[in-house]
Length: 408
Image (cartoon, rainbow, N blue to C red; front, side):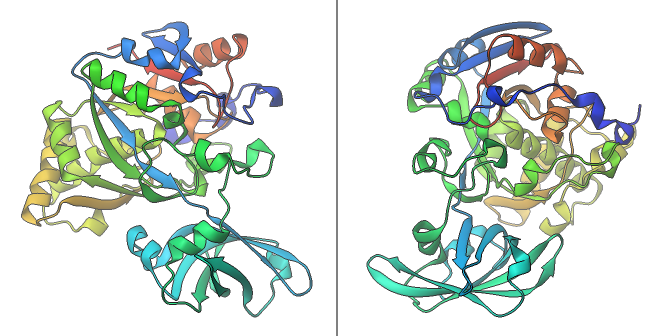
């Protein structure tokens, strides 16, 4: 069956609320680990993960950092308005955005929008002992959200400092609880570096400095890339067939040295999390585009949702050639980092090009993430999820982990 005609109702399972982990366990690397190897399922503890991986393999992590993306304003009437930052509008570059002074613009979701008919919202705050005023102004609609300008009256304070002072960490909606101070630590990976996500790449939450050191001791090569996770990651598939679901676009950046290392590993990798998967697999299609037209610009690298499924057999190239094409492009244009975006949907029918093993948590029923897992284990997802449900595994963001190794 053609991928677009997949019925999302075929990817559901019963997930009782008590199986959703509301908080992480005390020691991140003591979570349970389900191991799926060529159709066989077993379980272990996460800190034993390095024992299951082949020496000399390359493991790829997403080093994005979750930002405190929720800002609350109270109107004079008493109404509480929540402004949820989705993606930068001006400047569009994440790094530049967090350094801005006095003014910036974001695309946002607004809670209680009907109470914000006109005018600006403002609130006072303190940064480093200095009082300042933050103002939000609606500039118009943008997709399902709003285009909002932020202004503040102190040129010595960056937008990053403002978020640290008043922003709240956006934990997943299905946790059904308020953000707590502990989430600021537990909802970040220990290797998070680049600010920009509104949700954590949760497969990485299990890693500790000890597990990373153990990977090194086992001869596992490590490399990082960046995909900023958008709120769309929680967007349920509402259409009957997945062809009616529009994937959100996510910003990715990959360093030249990461691509060079990937090439040394014959364009094969163990991905930590679905976001690393989406980035690595998108690289293949960027390489294919460059094969067809080496003069493309970075804006034209964007991987569209259905692109992988429209590629004719005679347009396919080896994964190593795809990565080499990107490196050649970067060499010609004197680039150290590739910046682009992806909308890729990975669902049954998709043929993986680069990712050979996957570390991931347990995902929501009828989600695009469950489709990605099903494609990876060639439809065998139910065996994995039935085992996890029968053996007291904890589900979703703060839940347990799995290592998936499909057959050759």
